[in-house]
Image 1 (cartoon, helix red, strand yellow):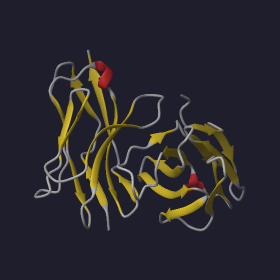
Image 2 (cartoon, chains in turn purple, green; image 1 turned 180 degrees about the vertical axis):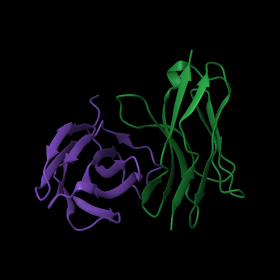
Image 3 (cartoon, helix red, strand yellow; image 1 turned 120 degrees about the vertical axis):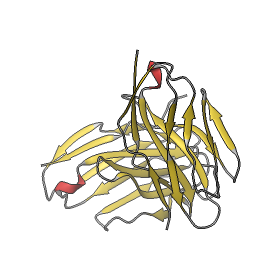
Image 4 (cartoon, chains in turn red, orange; image 1 turned 45 degrees about the horizontal axis):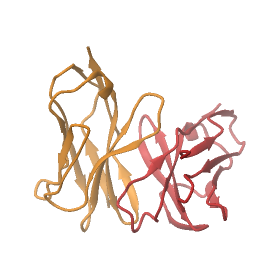
Length: 116
Length: 110
């Protein structure tokens, strides 16, 4: 069974640009959540999608957005990049929505974004 | 709000030593608690969980007990191996999301 796949694995952008990251969940999983991991802040929740609907959002500015497609694949977009957006962006999938499951998330290896 | 505080690393141990990683939390209501582990070059994976007070989660020789009176969920292993070298994250499930601690890097030397 294939795991969670994130693309691209590494990317470099400059300030002011935008970026789109992709996440393919485990087959059959309908929930996809996104996290930002930095050395200073640890893992911070960005948002969760379930059946193409955003169910919850963390404390991030509107420059961070996402969507989910009918096949459960998800994308997140960051516009007007800032130096502080440099981070590892992790995607996780689960069978059920975060509101009902018991926390067993399956994580991808992440997309490492560097903003110059 | 919800928050998780775990002991800072890095932690370096010798094989067969006892490992404990402290984790305390702040939350409203009755959260679920988890430990996730991230091995070098891999994504995070669930190590163990506990969904109510006094529950003990266990897996791969690791244990943690949900202590509501002390708002803690400390991770322990009696005899670590080199293969236990990883980053360990304590997490809390509440308000429709997971909140993670900062992570503790553990290195086990042969």
